Image 1 (tube, rainbow, N blue to C red):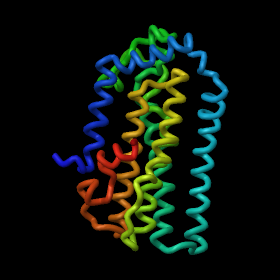
Image 2 (image 1 turned 180 degrees about the vertical axis):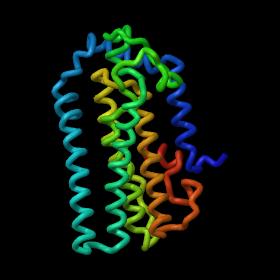
Image 3 (image 1 turned 30 degrees about the horizontal axis):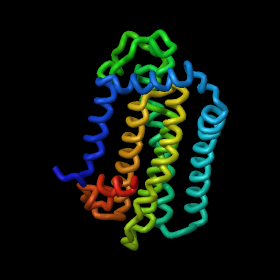
Image 4 (image 1 turned 30 degrees about the vertical axis):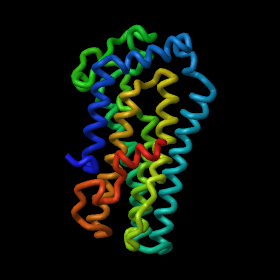
Length: 250
């Protein structure tokens, strides 16, 4: 298997999520946070709740509205080139698709939030991945992490720029993945500290948002013929390999 293959993130991501869930690491990490803040006292923290949760949600909403306005203006007033208008449309669609997908999954899965789990301030049993659609111990639906999806949806910026410069054949710096990684990570950690999500919830959201952006990018390149129709690996499509991501983290 080539490590630059498009399915590599899925393999590593799913394995990590499974290990977190079934090894007890998910629960252990949540219990450490629970013990450190003597319950979920940070649940109503000004920084975590008001700034990173409520204000963060407003930021995502304003970002979507800004993209919607820019998309409408670019097509109505013939702003930018055709390729660039398509890139803006892609960013809008990818952002909305990512958020809606995660929100929709939360409505049908049955994994609880840490603050609802027995031993972590709640009364519900811990529910595993294989029980996500069939558990009889259903409670508040907390999987995947909804709030973090607004941040991880910014992965679309990287692919938006790939479309924006498609007619020039320019490569895009992998640093354009950082907005999604940083904002999504901040939103995710904030919710974990509040007791709203386990780590596996946030990793699941990051993985799903990545593939939303990647899949829609592939669709746009084929629909509008902005890039070669065949793209089977990250290397061939100028996607970041794990070697690149490790370098970014140094």
